[in-house]
Each structure stands twice: as structure tokens, then as C-alpha cells.
Length: 176
Image (cartoon, rainbow, N blue to C red; front, side, top):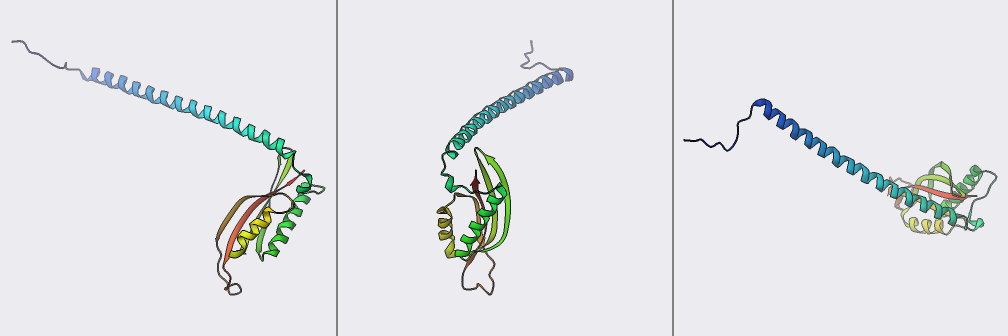
């Protein structure tokens, strides 16, 4: 009688060679997928760079159209930054805001303007948060709030009747 074998018996060497070829094929496939992912990321980055350059060019065009009276003036950007700080501190006094720390942040060229950064840290009465931000937006000079962090302030005996909010405010003024 004849015997029918549905599989052929392989030697360990042949089995190892098949496994090696299968492993190499799998690794090549994974490498191919990684190359595709890298290519897609590069395309996406190129598109984002294009969008950023368009936004930068629009900002440069629109910044030249700003009313010069809304920009800070001074002999140097640092003096203009001091004027910005003074304006914010005067506004803070009107709303009974306690400013604990004022930090001069970056001074950067943005298009045709120079951006003057400041960071304020302190405490504000809860009822004054909205009116203060509205007054900040209605300033004579252009002030842009970049970041505002709020959290409940620690209670003290001298302000136990008014709820206060601790804040960190990062803002920019502009100088030409």
C-alpha cells in the first residue's frame, strides 16, 4: 500500500531557514510601514510650515495697518515694556488687585512690531475678574492676553469677607 503524507517532514535546518525568511519578510514589512509613516509626517510638517508662513505674512501685513497710537512708545523696547507694566499696575489698583510678582518676559520681533511680554502673579477679588479683563481689553493701547491661570487663593484674616482668586497673567503689548 502506498502511504500518502499531507506534509513533508523538514529537517531542523530547513525549518530554521523558513523561519528566518519569514522573520526577515516581517521586518521588511514593518520597516516599509515606518517609512510610509515618516513620509506622511514630513508631508504634514511641510503643510503646517506653509500654513505658519501664510499666517506670519498676514500678521506682518495686518500689523503695519495698526493705529500707531495703540502701540507703546519709548526710546527702547525696554522703556516701552516699563510703560506697559505701569499701565497694568494702575489698572490693577483700580480693581483692588494685589500684584505680588511682576516678571519681564520676552521682547521679540513679530513682523514689523516688537512684542513686549510681561507676567503678573497675584490675587484678585472674585467679583473683579470679569470687569478687570473687560477693562484690559478696552485699554487705550493694544494689550493681548496670552495666558491666564486662575485658582482659589488662600484665605487670610484681612480679606476673609471677599473671595479672592490667585492668578498668573501673561500678556503682550506692542512697540514699533
